[in-house]
Amino acid sequence: MISSPLSVRRSGILLHPTSLPGPFACGDLGNDAYRFVDFLHQAGQTLWQMLPLGVPHEDGSPYQCLSVFAGNPMLISAELLQDCGWLESEVYQTLLGSEAGEPIAASRQKFMLKRAYAGFKLNASVEDRAALKQFISDQAEWIHDYGLYQAVRQSHDYSGWNQWPSELRDRNPQAISDARAHFAEQIEDVYFEQFVFMQQWQALKSYANSKGILMFGDMPIFIAYDSADVWCERNYFDLDEHGQLLTVTGVPPDYFSETGQRWGNPHYRWDVMEADDFQWWKRRVGMQLALFDIIRVDHFRGFESSWEIPADHDTAIHGHWIAVPGSALFDSLQSHFGTLPIVAEDLGIITPEVEALRDRYDFPGMKILQFAFGGDQDNPYLPEHHVANSVVYTGTHDNDTTLGWYQALDENTRHHVHEYIGIEPENDMPWPLIKAALASVANTAIVPMQDLLGLDSHQRMNTPGTVAGNWRWRFDWSDVPTTLAQQMKFLTAEYGRLR
Image (cartoon, rainbow, N blue to C red; front, side, top):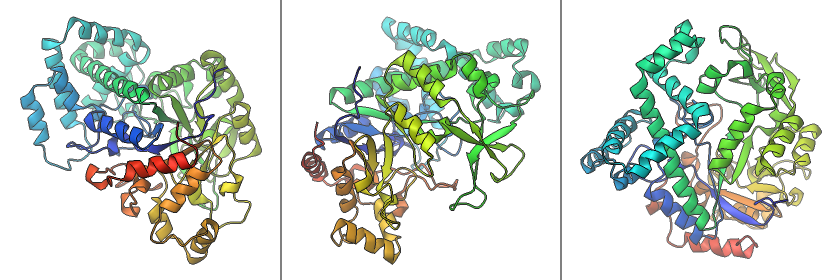
């Protein structure tokens, strides 16, 4: 049996590619991504963890995407398109002259990609043309429907598929055939953007792997209602005959929220999925394994049971737990793929049944140091309760930065931190927590880039429960001290994580 890449001591950095520096509205897969790989290598890190790479909705959240298969075209590098000879230098210079701070929208990238596709059709080699054709053939199970979905959605002012005319909403065969013919050019554009995304991603991944760095991705358990996947395969989701939601996802009321959380994603029809031996999940996980060396599965507890809320309820209060055939799913996936390089996001209130499901497949769980203090000695996030088969974080993308967290602590919790760590860390935070993560017995330690840079709450990636201002954080190379890589490499070696 092949051992897990997380069965040995190693460490890495959490940074979504959109947070990379660069001249455009968000970071991309171009030269700064390669420079970041070099930084990881110099710092002795062997993991680059990131958020999902899918195509987000207008709010920019990578956890609510338009497809579980498609890559985000905002990540496509104009620099690399120019290097290929597909994007004219004048167009590239025009893009560079765009107004700084442009909102996260697709307009500039669509213009760039249309020009690049025109350049491809004029200048691409025989090998590149064949590669595009082969890519479309290889991805046929999803890309034809995704291309049509994107074209129709754009033609209807980006409204959700459930608001389209009924013949398109319900995928009337003649209406679908007519739409494919009508939107043929726009669909081709989508094929090209996905081809370019995958080319650029695989080149970056190969470069990282050549430096001994593994790509560590993220897969949400649930998917967006407004997505090509739900539109095309409604039989797998709990919808009525018109495609309207019957139930939605969330979590029950707890000490964080009196009304629980109503996420609004469609629930799966697990009986239908199990009946065909989880073919949809095999396709989905197969794509993730093509993108990443390791996959974090968000809301892992939902594979044991899920909180089901009537769709017409505004809160999660009147939901109920439904059983989920998680063992049957993972048995099928392991039979198909072999050992699964999965990390289970097992945060929050976790039952013995969820722990048993996680442990049955030897999936590492997560330990968050920001959750460790302020409670009693049974707190599972305290380092003495860590186990080797786990991943320890100072914080995640949903947490405040460690400096911001520390600055907001009440006096008692701050005293607990001081007593536990054994020093007065006011002037040195977040490094005491970074060292605690690296010192943990957990095989894997991950530190967000914001913590390495000592940034405060204004630089956090996401604030759960809010909509505005998330997912936009970026760093600049001028923020990175010249000694940071060597400092991290020294600590990584000191705590036995240098590979």
